[in-house]
Amino acid sequence: MEYSVKSGSPEKQRTACVVVGVFEPRRLSTAAEQLDQATGGMISAVVRRGDMEGKLGQTLLLHTNADTAMTDRILLVGCGKEREFNEKNYRATVATAADTLNQTGAMEAACYLPELHLKGRDIPWKVRQAVLAVEEALYRFDQLKSKKDTERRPLRRLILHVPSRRDLNDGEQAMREGIAIAGGVGLAKDLGNLPGNICTPAYLAKKAADLTKHQERLEVEVLEEAQMEELGMGALLSVSRGSRQPAKLIVMRYRGGAEGEKPIVLVGKGLTFDAGGISLKPAAAMDEMKYDMCGGASVFGTLAAAMELALPLNLIGVVPSSENLPDGAANKPGDVVTSMSGQTIEVLNTDAEGRLILADALTYSERFDPETVIDIATLTGACVVALGSHASGLLGNHPPLVNDLLAAGRESSDRAWELPLWDDYQEQLKSPFADMANIGGKEGGTITAGCFLSRFTRKFRWAHLDIAGTAWRSGEKKGSTGRPVPLLVQYLLDRVAEK
Figure 1: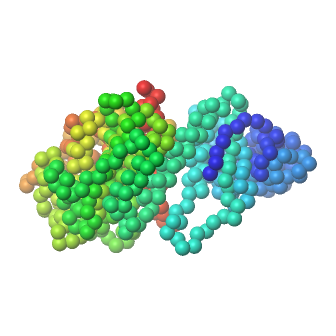
Figure 2 (figure 1 turned 90 degrees about the vertical axis):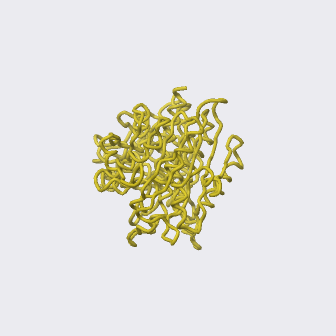
Figure 3 (figure 1 turned 45 degrees about the vertical axis):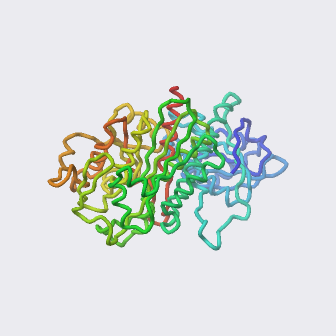
């Protein structure tokens, strides 16, 4: 998709289609009014007849008279009630427009939706969110289908209109950011949607190496099991023992900042398939456990976006990758393993394996002398119970870092919600046979998982994002969401702004 940002009146646009909004009940937006005047009242006449009420999600495609307008088509998009027009409705309106345009055969369009008033949001925000909403609406994962459903004349070019020439520079920068973030989201989605027989730890390692082909500032190192054994990564390796696929520790270093500048380290859980091990999961919906590597996928996507934007930061992505399957060599409930940190762990439930591979990856991150470390993981079903699919769970040992991530979530509309990391919860991890158990019982499951990870992060500033509820959708529209790539990229953009 090709994007551009322009200013100018809608009636003067030489394009296949112009997109304007209509509010409920039958109130034309400013751009729609301008087009109405240019077409001799065509839009207002249609609205009066009741063909377009302006309800959210409603669309109406009008064909114009070539003698009275420069555009062949006008797409009216319902925006709902103006006083209820919020961020969610804005994105939904843009997505509806994109989906409709993709089926009209117009191939190009001028979109005036970024000019709609949205309380508390400026033009750059609306431009960037428009790009993300369009890419979300048009995303298809059909790489594995022998016959693909393709539009005959799909939308290929979209012009996002801003009110005045003064908005062009900021709008174009927002467009570039939106394109980069959408690319990162798309990469994370693709990796998440691949099945476990294709997206193995070795596949992820190769994908990391592929990122270096067009990026000189990126270096990739992949640690094999023998190297992890030498480092004492007993927690990570205990998970991979039940699989025929060898584990990989993927390290991606992007040197965009100054020499010697401390890096931001992103650690992503890369369980390419999680059957639960000996503590076997129920069969229903077990196919969705291919999404257990979405934390790792988000690290790939965030790094890809950062490189596309050439962010002046030093970033390191660490992705511990394995499968968790039942086998004669697999972890058994009651086993005690020794982590890279030297701390011992009693494995009471082999399905709580993500925290085991993250424990060693977090300890490994100490060697980078990081500014901050953020881990991202589809860690606990308890987070889905607590927060549903709307917000990622957030815990951390450094309040300013937690606040920065919360702010990035609000700005990017990829929100997180802080949960407490109180010492009171640490009591639930006590074990009579090891330094800690890998589960803390039914109460506060997301929090006790965070408490477990916190025992491996005492030497640096750290935050944990539990994306079990936000990383993918179930049901008819099942698929990876690419979250929290928008949140993480916004966090990085905010760090650049601070510098």
